[in-house]
Image (tube, rainbow, N blue to C red; front, side):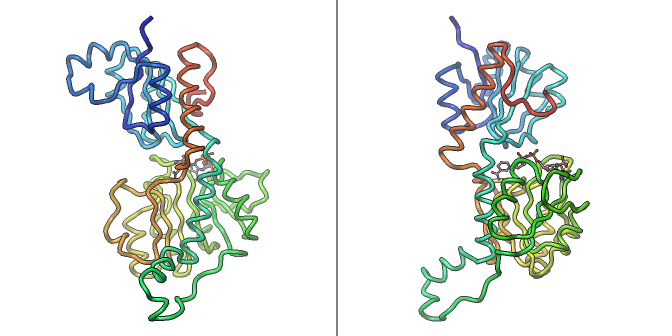
Length: 316
Ligand code: NAP
């Protein structure tokens, strides 16, 4: 019996690719190079496997007439044209929840790193400054400080639970208040920033949140404030962020995501009060395996005609 054809929309995690290869015939996008040969297989491709940062537009979908599902390994799916998929009757799935702990752990780690200047402390020891210059400049306290969360969904709540363990005073903003949560709701990001020492951004990306954290929000966070972004680079106005850090109108930042990954502006890299990580929110072996398992389970369910384990909200 011929195997179901699944196209990789981007370079996939080896864990996801290995599962797909066991179950399906996996094609990579190099096949599109030969347009005539691709057109023959394209007619039988039933699944598209993608990452959280993959771009899948209407044009690619139009070339895949048998496409039934786009299975994203990642919770964010802002790169997928979901409206175009829905219009073609293509389901879109993602991998929520299984990565909450890791992303929340990283957010707390970045907040502590920026506040206590851990990368600079490491450099201070390795570079010999401890011996020649003595003690480091004093850092900022985290325990008991005011934390503002921009977004209080699955991951935002996991961050809040951890921050409560540090005795932080927690408030949040979102489009709507969640009355069941024991945290203070603030209607907009600027007012939240004005009442926060640390502002952690954890909303989806895409048009709805583009530059939600703008120059005004950064000014409100202020010269002692620290911004942590584990959401998407698009949510923060990166040019305004660099300006604020260079001018000292913002105290510091810790960033896992950027406007044009994997390219990071040299001006940002040059700032010592900034901690940088290469989009590693969910990057542990255990979590990436759980994400790959869930993404694959969605494909299998789709082809077997069973309910999908984790469709995106628009496709439920
Ligand atoms: P979620 O459960 O859907 O939560 C999203 C939160 O953002 C909700 O509180 C939502 O509240 C709020 N929100 C959405 N649009 C908003 C807007 N325009 N203005 C203000 N708040 C808004 O999502 P999640 O599972 O926590 O994941 C959040 C995001 O984290 C993902 O979409 C992804 O982009 C990012 N992420 C990053 C990494 C990484 O490696 N750094 C890993 C995983 C996820 P309302 O709907 O009430 O507005």
